[in-house]
Amino acid sequence: MASEAKKERILVLNLGSTSSKIAVYDDTEEVFKETIRHTQEEMAQFSDILDQFSFRNEKVRNALESNGIGVDTLTAVCSRGGNIIACPHGAIGIDQEMIDYLTRPEDTAKHASLLGSMIAFDLHKEFGIPACIYDAIGTDEMQPIARVTGLPEIPRFTVGHTLNTRAMAIKCAEEVLKKPFDECTFIVAHLGGGSSIRLYHKGVNIDCVNDDEGNFSPERGGGCSGKELVKLCFKEFGEGAGEKTVMKKIHGNGGLKAHLGTTDAIEVEKRIESGDKYAKVVYDAMAYRVAKDIGTLAVPVAGKVDRIILTGGIAYSKYLTAQIAEKVDWIAPVEMMPGEYEMEALAGGALRVLRGEEELQDFGKIKASAVDRIRICEGVEPYTVPEN
Image 1: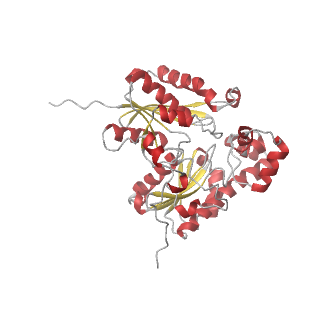
Image 2: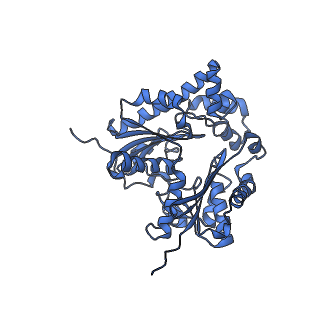
Image 3: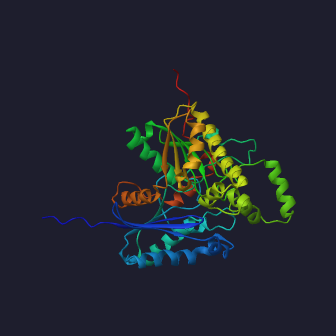
């Protein structure tokens, strides 16, 4: 009798600004999952994201140990990536060249997910197991026409929540519409500490609203007047202010945190229930801006959208999602898919690589071929509205 094939034990890492989500899968079976919450006081001791590496690495290893998962039993590790160069979706191997790129000093908007890549690479060096990222933050499939702005020096690009938005879109296509993903059109709004909204058409993310372009979120300032932002930078910080200081203002200390002193949406809703009128105005405005951005992304496909999907941690809020849905359900039915399917998506991607079903892409080759973001998807045809 043939013996059963050995199961792959995969550690997945999804590190965000306020939490470290980790899970272990034996093939597709979840063995262990934990979300390690980090308080504002804990994060305040670090002046830079890279300073958090030892702290986060220790937290991850301690959580595994306390749940009886030996790091030496892992056969692979897969992480949500970091701000890497524009790349295709799928799995990309973590190597020293990727780590060097993720930690480059000139990147003043580093995302906490890069710490997951660093932890994965640390395990790769120690145990020799495969390490990769999947559907990275830098996944960029935007159609060329959507890239052009009025400033040639600042083309648009896609950055943010590819992992969860793409996973939820695929899930909705297969389980709700019973259709292949590449035959559908979705607008997917990921609502979390940072938010982004994606337009998926025929399997390609052809346009988006990034977290610095439109709606604000618990800790991101969102889009605002460019002229007023320039004035604020000079008025508040002075001409000698460093880029890192200014970036922190809009990408970490904006949104609900700037208005209400907290990034906790549950706390904000409690304030509203207790009669805090300012909290209500700010929170309602956040929902209003999300709805506007969803409407914006309906335009490139002339409103021909199969589903609007609301996902991410804040999508658990019935208060917020109800306000968004009532403003956009004239475009398409709204599918509530709160939380994240990210851990399963990471594990599934790594497993397909281990089984030889999906290619492990080489970061060096991707970097060499991506001359700049505006050319990464020259082969993607702009969407045209079919005749009735």
